[in-house]
Image (cartoon, rainbow, N blue to C red; front, side, top):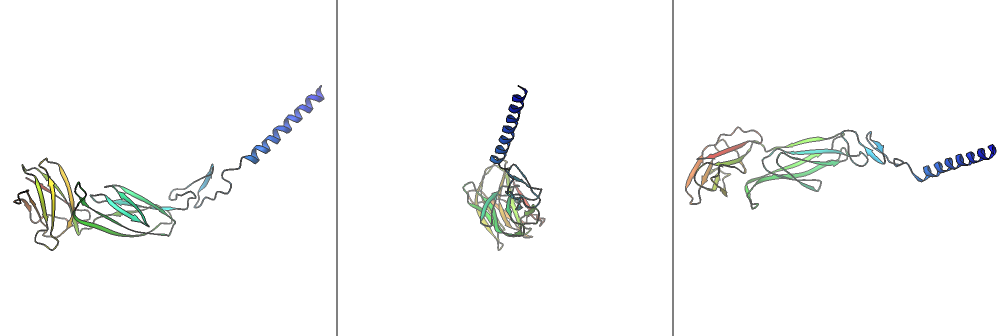
Length: 227
């Protein structure tokens, strides 16, 4: 009887060992053949990347573009386009040392999508860093200013002339009701004698600021309060 129990125990042990060998051979290590770059480590078949790297093999670094303007920005880098909201950012990935070439632009717009003021554009040429992210601020230069209007008067505003009589004069058809809310207009050339004229629908001059005070810094703006 003791001999039979010993034989049975040996058989069970052999079966368990054989089952373990079969299980191991049928369940391959998920990290086998996974090559994580730049100091990354594999966990359950996925690369865990150190700070500054991303991608399925930790092969990429990134460039983050920040919209510091007053209007949404439209950006295209290496053929990939995105919209950056006001105060927002967008991130692009690439191999370290590769070029990130593209453009960006922004402008004020009416509710129907018509441009107000002038369009501001940028040519962007950067390189993906050896370790990321590289942070790039996109600013409007001191050569331009952004116009914002608040209407305290009893009239509605229908037109605005900016830089009237100057080489960069612009005329925009707008609608600013007398609701005491702030309305973002657009970008205009900044001169030491820049001015703003606002009109009612009848075309009579109701408000003017000539010249407007500007401090000639990046992302400058002027608030016109109409009374």
